Length: 62
Image 1 (tube, helix red, strand yellow):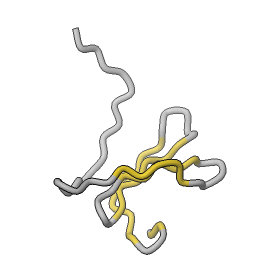
Image 2 (cartoon, helix red, strand yellow; image 1 turned 180 degrees about the horizontal axis):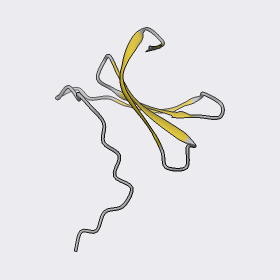
Image 3 (cartoon, one colour; image 1 turned 90 degrees about the vertical axis):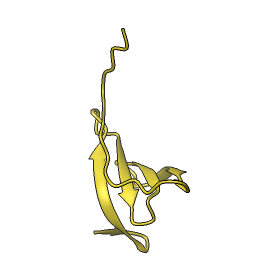
Image 4 (cartoon, one colour; image 1 turned 30 degrees about the vertical axis):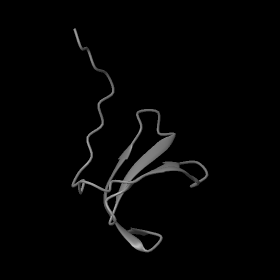
């Protein structure tokens, strides 16, 4: 699967299915609105190559 010219390495949907976070072949994270398919944000990763995604919905730091 590809988004634009880059292959998709991994993807996760938000718990409410409103967004998809995609790890692209360029190792950037791209956040899409699932209903419209519109890309809302790109998070570039210049220092490290991300290999996978993990979604944590609740964190208790105590």
